Image 1 (cartoon, helix red, strand yellow):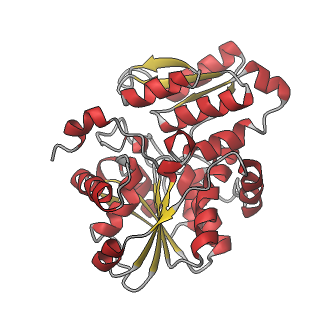
Image 2 (tube, rainbow, N blue to C red; image 1 turned 30 degrees about the vertical axis):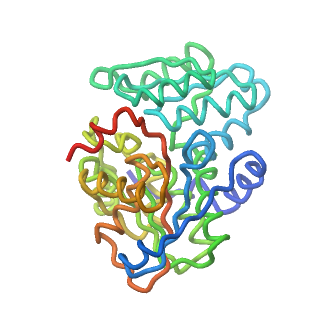
Length: 324
């Protein structure tokens, strides 16, 4: 597979997405902590997308994609597949825009995310990830019902929408030396890397994923697209099978490095951020922070941006999530 074709998303697409999202998406807060700065020996800025509508950055890309559909396609409705955050984002965006939504979710998705998706008015179809490939099921149902398929990351409008989070962060705090971003299918990382490239050109962008789901890291370092099959990680947003055909080239072009963190590192970081920043974050949401707090990234005396991607965690499952 070669990647010499033009990239699917540009800085102009992110600017257009920002205009489209103005007054609809929350401009989420940027938090700092002197305790964390002392511990890491750098100035850290947390872009808190756990305060975004539906509890994660996914609302940005979902709304940006649905808002650009023609009236005819909006009337027929959309379908997607997701373990939770993109599911909720599509469902809520559909509710806001009056678009019917169908969401394919794995049976082992967090119950809190399944319930929230249904509460936003979506039809939820559960599947067994051990027996069914979600992409195939999504394409099948889209064809049968005449729905528009909006995948969770491999879509130019989704990528552009996600990039607005990094755009806002840099506009608020100024030039960064590092930007750390979690990675599942690469939508947020792709959009963030594009935004950083044109707003803070000297910034090093680093993607972070779980050790147990390291397909993107292997893909980045080998320049060959790798896959993983239902990886065992508490970071459910990073259980994607691979980077996308659109996100992979963007990551190769704009991202400086990819690294991984352990499951225990995710648990320690969740607890630390709950205690120090006083915010609710989910396992996937702390991937980037874990890389810095666990010493995987050295940034002494540097300005570091970290995107906390979401906060949709079921408090009833804390005993399982925090089992070291």
